[in-house]
Image (cartoon, rainbow, N blue to C red; front, side, top):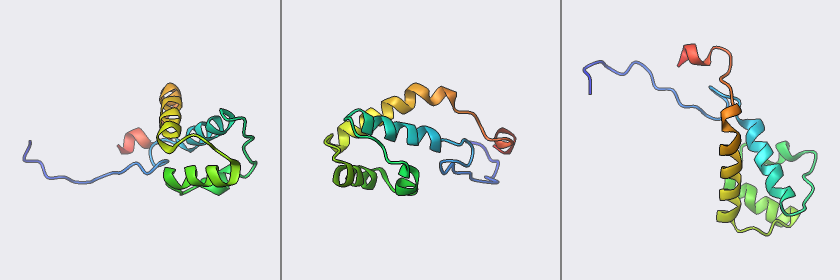
Length: 97
């Protein structure tokens, strides 16, 4: 621990430092396709801002998703991590950080 006072706190709220939304959406599409469910064209509009539990419930009720939440979430996390290395910082993000 140092005696230097904290000058700022920065939270990355999905998109502040890295535009991760396209990858998140890609994992949602894969989770539907895994169960032979065609994702709707307005998928992004239906899920933006919702927590994972609500997205899962929406997929189950509106599209017939059968995977339990824990399994669905593990699948999505694994797909996300497989491609996370392709994420790039937004212009100026590293300098700001």
